[in-house]
Length: 256
Image 1 (tube, rainbow, N blue to C red):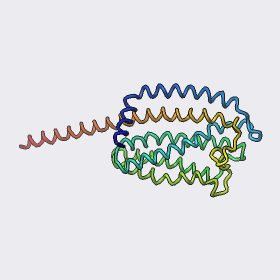
Image 2 (cartoon, rainbow, N blue to C red; image 1 turned 90 degrees about the horizontal axis):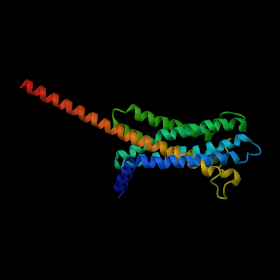
Image 3 (spheres, rainbow, N blue to C red; image 1 turned 45 degrees about the vertical axis):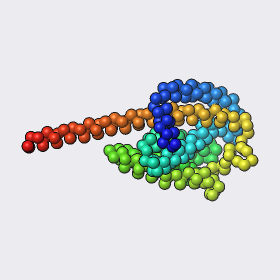
């Protein structure tokens, strides 16, 4: 059943790429316009002023940075179990996207932190653990690049690394509870409901889908590009093997 679903999803992405992208681009345009006006009309925080509106970029990007890594980790686990390259391609396609969203999270957090906390950076648990996440993404990409000539070895090593790196995810979540940090505790996901006023919460309902659509577009493009690249590599290897085989036959006939 799992193999059938995987085969269907692979065919769906590769054969319906243009249709999928067209829908995603339309959704992207819609959520961009809604996000623009929602953020424009959202009230400023009475203490932080205009700088508080950076949360509409910072928060969705932080959620995606973590969420994408969780998806990478599950894809890597699936690859280690089933050894199907589709799971490896999925993780590889997600890696750069996750790294970009983690970068945006760190940059927007620093910009927001300067007027709020009086510093661009502090080595507290939340910020440091997100920085570690960025380096985990970078290390994963480096593993894939370093072993590019040995795709099977690269896939296994990168998948194992991604699974081990997932230990950082609960550290990010729990960091504000386990250590004393500048970063506030959970604002949105609380037992008693979000602590942020509904008028300031509403723009998140549009900026989050906007970034999700952006990530989805890049994922579809990267997934199909990696799939095509792997196909070309296999064809080159097959052609090279055939060439070497023909040469060995030719040399053998000459010697005979």
